[in-house]
Length: 178
Image (tube, rainbow, N blue to C red; front, side, top):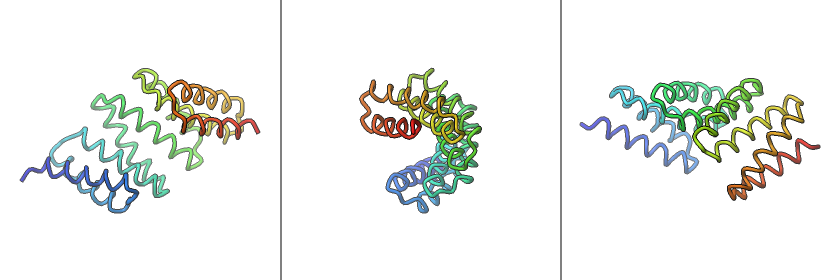
């Protein structure tokens, strides 16, 4: 009869399935967990489930569903004062909007994510936000802005020793310079 524990178990299982790339069963488990967290009034875990659902939909290329869930998760992160969660949700929303060709929305979300990531000292999220900004600006044909943001992302990746980020940054910068 421990509904909160049941929700946590379903949520953890859904998260594990998400990490394994089993998106459809992940969505099923996360949706069940979400219903329980709403039932018991656990807003923080509700937001986590919504964020993970957004990630699952994004992985399936269902960006509208991702935006729907991530927007709800963002509202909850703001409501409960979860700045790291807010930053993560904004970064994911930026990616989804970039994927949908909604570049101005992507820039709006990535700019907010950049501000928060700098504020809370999350260097990896700074790189993500700068990268999303660079990609959106490049898609809009604003190559100087794209180069500026990709260069900043590359510099931070080098500073924190993120070799994968360095490679991605070099590739993005090279593409913007073409």
